Structure formats: C-alpha cells, structure tokens
Length: 277
Ligand code: C2E
Ligand code: CA
Ligand code: CA
Ligand code: CA
View (cartoon, protein in one colour):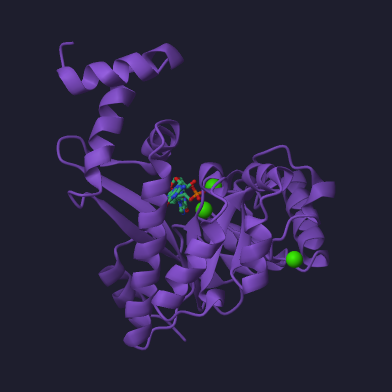
C-alpha cells in the first residue's frame, strides 16, 4: 500500500510465493529498464589456448540502475526469470548481440558471439526459429552464434522434447554447455546433448596449478569432451600458472581476467586492434 496502487497488484500475485520487497521493487524497475535503455551488453574475449588469438566473445548483460548503479546479472536474471521478464530481456540480448556482430563484420572484424540462454527461454517452442530469423535479418552465418546453456537447462529441454537445441544445432548454431562442473555432472548424459562445446566452470579452474587432484579431474574432463568431439573452453582464467596448466591439459579456448575483463563494444574493438592475429 505504501508504494502505491500498481505495487499492491504485485503484492497480491507474488508475495504469497515469498518474493522479498526488494525483489518486487527490482522487477518493477526491470520492467522499465529496457525502454529506458539501462541495459547493455558487454563483451569478454575468448582466446585460443595456443596462439592467444581471438576465438570469439561472450556477451554478458549489464544493468545500470539509475539509483543503485551497476546491478549484477547474477542478481537480476533470477528476478527476471521469476517474474516472467526473461523472455523479453532474452529477445533483446539476441537482437543486440546479432546487431553488434553485424556491425563489427561491416568494419572487417569477423567475430563469433556467445549468448547466455536461461532454462526459461528454452521453454519457448519457437525460440530456435526466432534466433535463426534474427541471424538472417542481420545477414549473419548461424555459425557465428554460440548459445551457452547450463547442463541442467539442456537436460530439461531434452526431456520436454521441444527440440529447440536440435534445431539450433542442425542449423549450424553452436550449442555450448556452460558452467560444467557445477551441476550434477551426469557424464553418461553428455553424449546425448547436442553440444559442440563444453565450458569448464571457474570453480574447476581454481587450483589446477597447485592441486594434483584438481588437475587430474580437469585432464579427464578434457579427454572426455574431446572424445565426444566437443571443443573445450575454460572460463575464469586469472593467472599465468592456470593458463599454462589448462593449455597443457588440452583446453582449446581460454577466457578470464588474465586476458581481458568484459568491456563495452568500443573497448572491445580497441582491444582486438592491439592483439596478434
Ligand atoms: P557465466 O555465464 O558463468 O559468465 C561468466 C561470469 O564470470 C561473468 O560474470 C564474467 O564477468 C565472470 N568472469 C569472467 N572472467 C572471470 C575471471 O577471470 N574471474 C572471475 N572471478 N570472474 C570472471 P557476470 O558478467 O557477472 O555474469 C554472471 C552470470 O549471469 C553469468 O555467468 C550468466 O550465467 C548470467 N548472465 C549474464 N548475461 C546473461 C544474459 O544475457 N542472459 C542470461 N540468461 N544470463 C546471463
Ligand atoms: Ca556463460
Ligand atoms: Ca560460470
Ligand atoms: Ca554433437
């Protein structure tokens, strides 16, 4: 009541499900963030483990809140999912990422982009069709797009039988298993996932340079992924010692603060210009 009529409505529908006042406020703000242009994509480079050349970028969502400043996607994505806003936000991410890659391409910078998809988005049966038509509208080859999804989201999608992942895979969009090593890694299911890339989570990267057992796990994951014809990316690489172990273990692609932090599109162009090709 205190915050006015429109909020009373949210109270009725969501308070029973345990949403905090803070989350309710955040979802109100998030509804307007898109129109107000408060959302932006930042891009973090992925480099080849051997030559250090640019392999692609990951698009990471940023929200500059007018009062609270930068809010982490780890905070507002769950809010968006909970309040049914992830569809619109996800569509915006797909559109923006494609627009950016097309603009880079026009400037002679051919660069693969990875976007993060949430399990909620995968429940839209027309998702693959919409992604493919967005690519086409921007004149982009499907192979320029990578879709990163957690193993849990992929398993759910396959059990639902909606075929979104197979459609993307068949059209040449690359599907990547994100955060590998954080879920219930059901290794036997790996070969059933239509994925061409596996991303080893930062939690598995930490310690590989000092812990013999962490290194053994890493090495067997890389072997398994390669045996399943998947490319291996390691994320959250922060130190030279980690880089060396990851490269020796056979990771194909590396990503992390050691190389670059996520940055806006302009900064990324400058970063690329200063790189070996
Ligand atoms: P993620 O997909 O695992 O993305 C990697 C996160 O690690 C990013 O955090 C990135 O900034 C951070 N990171 C990269 N290199 C390093 C490093 O060397 N050290 C450390 N400590 N961190 C590193 P960010 O940008 O805060 O994103 C958090 C999560 O939010 C992402 O995790 C992803 O799950 C989600 N997310 C981000 N953008 C989107 C989006 O557009 N859609 C959806 N559905 N989720 C998104
Ligand atoms: Ca990701
Ligand atoms: Ca991660
Ligand atoms: Ca495959």
